[in-house]
Length: 169
Image 1 (cartoon, rainbow, N blue to C red):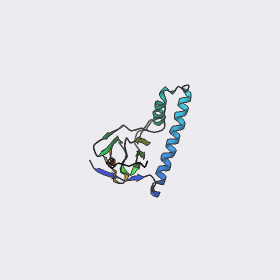
Image 2: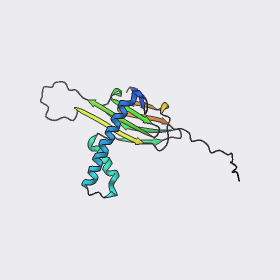
Image 3: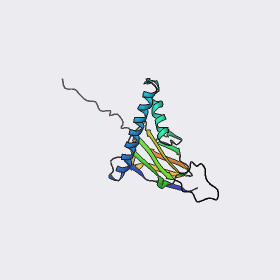
Image 4: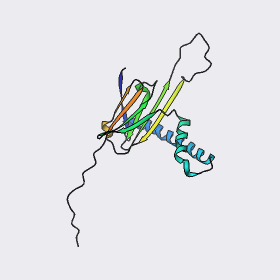
């Protein structure tokens, strides 16, 4: 099993502009469909988050994933079988991470006629809001055997100052 390092793209970098434009477009598509789902069920506010997740699943393949935390970092793990490192993009800002990928499977001509396949093309999209601020310059993303692991070092919170401030009377 080989390990591949993925480059992460930071919000605000000129080289990342295309990725973040496509992320914005994907988020807008999800927003519109979630609103349509909300209206279709009568606008009851109880399931707003369900509408969002259902819209995501309808528009994209949403890979299984998890987010954990160590004392020094947040760690996101996702199952992305069938994707190569060059087919995945990881976009970062200090408070969120987005994983996007496109893969197209080319089949060799076979003796038998193919009547059904799900292996032609797939796209993944997943966004996580982070529970803390991370150092986007030190993020590491590795793809090993269809599993993507992204380690995002936390930015230490400044210690409260022990100095006191005197108010003028």
